[in-house]
Image 1 (cartoon, rainbow, N blue to C red):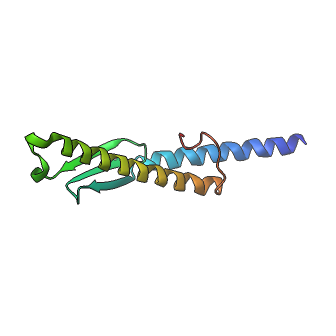
Image 2 (image 1 turned 135 degrees about the vertical axis):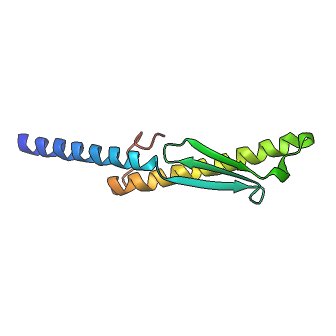
Image 3 (image 1 turned 60 degrees about the vertical axis):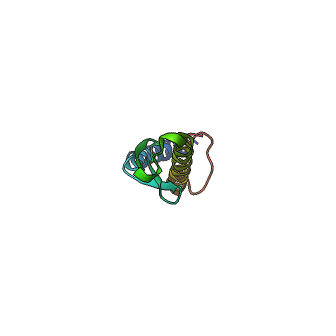
Length: 106
């Protein structure tokens, strides 16, 4: 029985190391999303960090800042959602689809 526990601990350590590798790799993977027909594009990495935002100059209107604000929120929200899905997919490969609470930062 002691050997079985030792094997489980080794497997857990190996999985943890693989997860750390995947998480490091996710920092270099990106998801993009646009809003307003491409007027605003947000780029988020696998660490859920907003790394860039592009705004078409034609959408910049001092008399309608609210439209630009809404487009930014929509683009960032969608890019973040896509990044979360990417992370879940990558981590799911390690856990073979088993949902482990707290493992995906949720």
